[in-house]
Image (cartoon, rainbow, N blue to C red; front, side):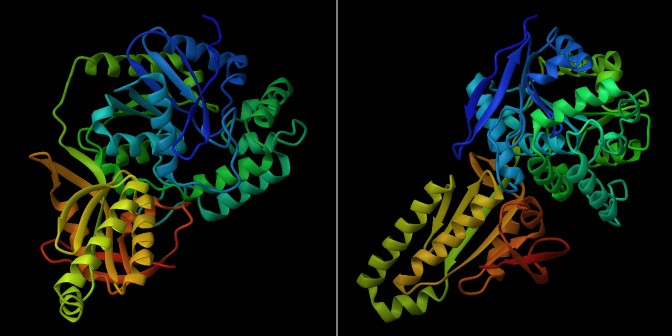
Length: 447
């Protein structure tokens, strides 16, 4: 098989994402760990062998994440929502309507998990290589690196990235001791690193890695899911992730002594992936549950304002309010679901866009003498008679009802999923939401 041609897809914000397509069969999107370079990967024997084997049973769509490899560089962190946009752009460019998603490591896994939860109708199945759902350890997730370990790893990147004479400790810390001890391997991987990312790029991606946390969306994944996990210290984390995704299972693979066991134990990895795809290829499930972001807005003290203005003037103000709101919904790719009097209910395919939309609406209607309150929540919603409903919608409405004038409140999930977006929040405390079980921690958007 010839090395495939590198092509480019343009993401929603204009960024160009490099990708390659090779092989025949059902579509399989690869979301690699963040260090990648589409063309140099074919120069590494274990990687190229693995690609050729995948191509025997799948049409493989491989991509470099933005900021690395042959994709456009970036100068600041980006959120998970933007990276999902990049995947969608690549899938659209390749004409892939319903691929299997194969997420490798924390980065690739987060992107594929978010895509699968948000777009189940475009996801045939989800494969996760290794079970890691958070980049930093806490009391509820003891399997991730500690803050100190992450800091040490960042220092190794800053001091030794791409330097074959110095990068031995970095390779060891990355789980590749045999590469660290082999001068030829060090030379190859140093060159690979230099091509994949500059030191600054690598540090940006490392910080993104540490802030990645997609635990809150696991229960909203409703596509067939398999986690491929070697029999090593990562197994408890993989089993925990599987327990959070309805119907997910763990396929145990032999423990690998070195980096990237999908390459060093390819036969078991390939067998598991091929079996998963073959079992699901002809299955079509009626999936009516999706991960969605809901936004609720309404005008504060609308009754008093209407009384003071009079019917005609109030109608004019209300029409301008509606036009402004619909304009920003269009700009941020929101879908208007319902308008009840002076309030709007809309859905978005990403939480950052919903929050930005609410901020702009709030600012834009103030010159009309109006103030709005807004609530944003990301959660599982149901499609009922063609309309979005269910508990996720109820939670969003209740969050909005807790907001004060010119205030935007969001749920914990929204805060977690917008890391790297530039949005800032302050603690708004725990609240009881009418008709919703438990107490909910809410956050106020800081302007």
